[in-house]
Image (cartoon, rainbow, N blue to C red; front, side, top):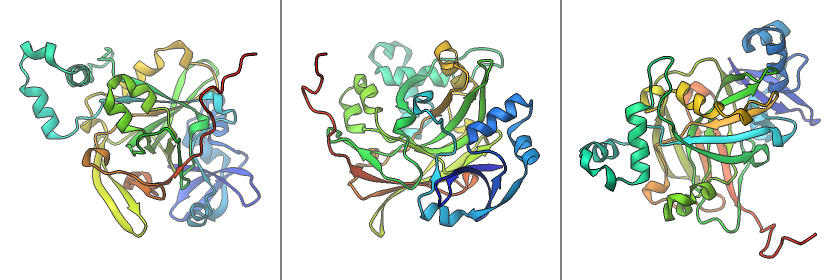
Length: 331
């Protein structure tokens, strides 16, 4: 089952089940979070909750997308209670990268970069035996729900940004239950938009480079994630395809298991606040930046994967500065 959130022409929120171009509107619910909370409190799964409520015939999916009325598939009415985070160095990447790592001898450990060393830890210990804890991945914070851009909308790029680069990824969507237990609702496509020029200056700038907008959706795929997934990431400039490349994900293409990545996020007690929503990006090995592409305002990103329905599309626009040097005032 694949779910979307959308707005009616009157601005009312609804949840829909995707059936081709037809959207079936779930009865008696205004958000995916509300639907999931009802399922948890009733002791039911998400699919069971939808089937129990029933659906009514809804609008055309294509018309919703064209009108910009499709919302992220999971959010929180208070953006401060939606945490956006991610893990990096999780995918095996290109054969050349792996070969370079494996050719280094044990005595060269001291000469490895921190990035290569962490990647090596993931390859060696990111998929522990069941019940065991594996290697800790790279982790980063992007922001709260206020940074999320709806599918189809452009990414705002701050004036101080040095780059506007896509990161095609899979995203885990989570809700914390009333008892503090995290529950995975499913997965979505994501664009973990970042500043790669800033990051390349120094790995210590990684935290800065991630404080950008992001987008995920348009659909939430309920259930388990296939182990081997292949999609396409492309950039359009006007009517031309500026850049296009396949990307892979799923555990067969990762050096960490999902269980391990989820454990190392939710092991922190501050991430177990009842009612909160968590949106977690799982990483990628494919970037246009690595191929020397420089994105411009007006370009469009398209991230697609057949198992997730419609592609995730976003544009790029420069945002005027809203904070200046000396802008902090003493009280």
